[in-house]
Length: 419
Ligand SMILES: Cc1cc2nc3c(=O)[nH]c(=O)nc-3n(C[C@H](O)[C@H](O)[C@H](O)COP(=O)(O)OP(=O)(O)OC[C@H]3O[C@@H](n4cnc5c(N)ncnc54)[C@H](O)[C@@H]3O)c2cc1C
Image 1: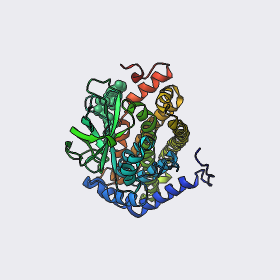
Image 2 (image 1 turned 30 degrees about the vertical axis):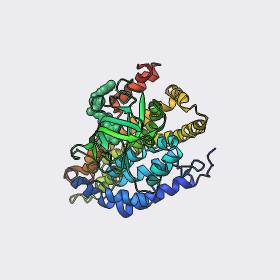
Image 3 (image 1 turned 120 degrees about the vertical axis):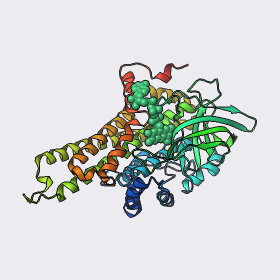
Image 4 (image 1 turned 120 degrees about the horizontal axis):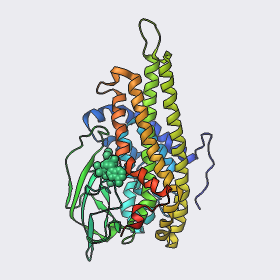
């Protein structure tokens, strides 16, 4: 059983507070200072990741050995929220690095822990999670990429779209079908070093928002990997992705946009209090329209924050149960039971709630900050552009709403009936 920690006066455990405070110092000392420049110049935040690695942030979901305890999702959520308040590109890149780590931690053999996970814990390796494919878009249960078994390992042939951290990372986590003719959710998970022959990163980042990220298509052409690069057993990948990656990714994405919304709200407050009209000598804050806007923003942010923290605590609980089951060797069978649990509804809801909320908040900030906010380089316009990515990221909000609607109506998820 994981060791219990006493909560401090903010309701966080000592470990959760430690990571939150550490990230908050790092963002005010370093990360916040370069956010504008990173956006204007489309630069990947390499130095931020160097500092985050030194501070120990890159490996927090991984146990140093299997008898120790990793930091929980609530800690990670607070780290992501703090990062996003300062620089959305850094938070998004961190999210895609961290999302696969709880799964790698539970699946790793001793040899994999020592040679592949230790450099992540030590802060030297940044990773990416290459799931989405151009052919099937947001429908992640329908993979086309595949691998072929060899005597020494596998050969991977994969085409992946939007791989965040592409070209900047030391390794890619790549789910593919167990063979070319396998069913689209019969998956193996591979750790592919970025120096592997056959990897081709296409183009360079040129997007509306999140301009410091590197979310690019990557081709894996006849990439040869050895046995140590496969995590988990053949064909077991899909359920592990659903149980371990989906929650941290979706709740983490919600935390990104919670941080963006908080930042926009602070910008709106500041502008409202400092914009003074020469004729009346009154501030914008004296306007009742602005007062109403501020209340509406605060209300929506607080509602979402409650949901994000609540669902992150649920996820901690679910992960603890799964981790206890894992040594018994029946984890894969147990995971299918999750599809009928309300937990997945909450994990989907929180993503939709946060992505809808942030668009309202950044739009309202633009209204409050007025004409000056429309100029390139203004914080409000950067946050507005960044805020559009959330609802488009997989599972995009439209697809997610249909998936949740199916479950609420007692219908199966598409992958439960897929051959
Ligand atoms: C900034 C960014 C970073 C990303 N990083 C990563 C990453 O690191 N790793 C990764 O694996 N992926 C990543 N993605 C990819 C992402 O997860 C989605 O897979 C991708 O955005 C889907 O785009 P698409 O145009 O193919 O969407 P499509 O699936 O073609 O959908 C386009 C639109 O059609 C509608 N639609 C389509 N199908 C349905 C349906 N069944 N029900 C209802 N509506 C539907 C929706 O309105 C949707 O917005 C990233 C995406 C972005 C934007």
